[in-house]
Length: 169
Image 1 (tube, rainbow, N blue to C red):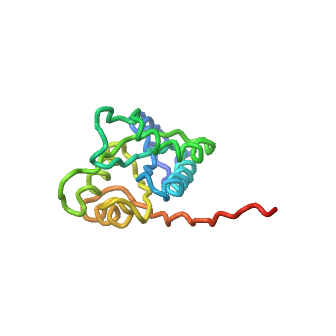
Image 2 (image 1 turned 180 degrees about the vertical axis):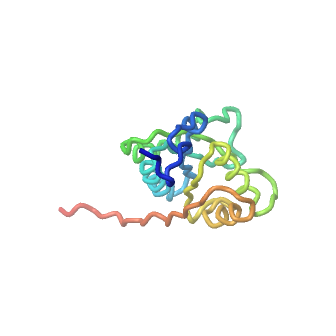
Image 3 (image 1 turned 120 degrees about the vertical axis):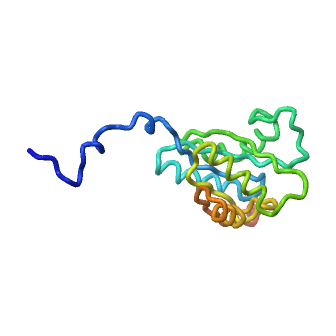
């Protein structure tokens, strides 16, 4: 039997160098109200692709950098709000910290640095909220990705606030 032309022999051979590289979906957590919606959207994308989440906790520049990694208390507090919503979906997660740059940089400087962090982890998609700290809202990230090249950025609408209701007597 002859081989079909649409399926060359090289496609049947697995690529061992590319098979082990994970391309997580990044979620930008800014310690705001939109964090849960951002994490749930990123978890749905990651679940469809069977990859883990890259949870990027954004810390302000004045937060102490004595324990700069994901083990610090301030980073764990940001992650603690989204892990109960993301954990049952069955995707793994990779915690990461991004400190906002201090000083007067350009409007796109922080966005470019955050996208570079996502690229170092080989994340093809970044999910961010429409609102966020200066330079890290979804629209600034989309602009930085378009200007400087980078991953696709998905904007998530703010979570709807439901009014508190008192139980009826």
